[in-house]
Image 1 (cartoon, rainbow, N blue to C red):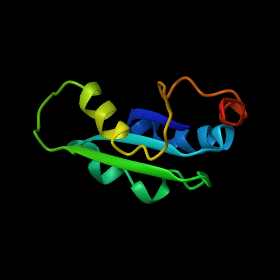
Image 2 (tube, helix red, strand yellow):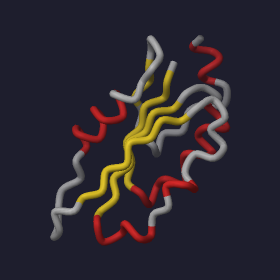
Image 3 (cartoon, one colour):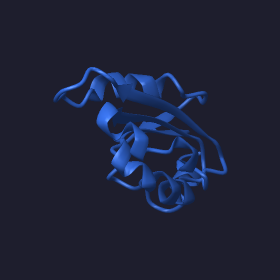
Image 4 (tube, rainbow, N blue to C red):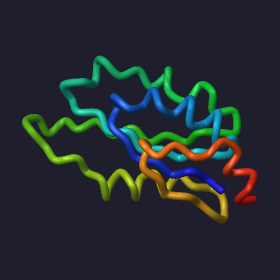
Length: 104
């Protein structure tokens, strides 16, 4: 099982504690508005994801107010999956500790 997430850059800090609970592959798409691009460091994301994390970073360079592209991000994260099964979850819904082991 791969845990599939889409999130905004300001929630990227959640990936490490989620990975500590999940202990299986994670695929995530991260949305970064152009105005915040210099505040986001992708090198700091997912350092505790010892079972592998595949990231898609989407920087919105259209300028001005924009809507959050939830469907595009979900599809980008799904494209990162390399396992036969996945669990699509909201980044704010952290998995129970050890859930991946129970699903396998």
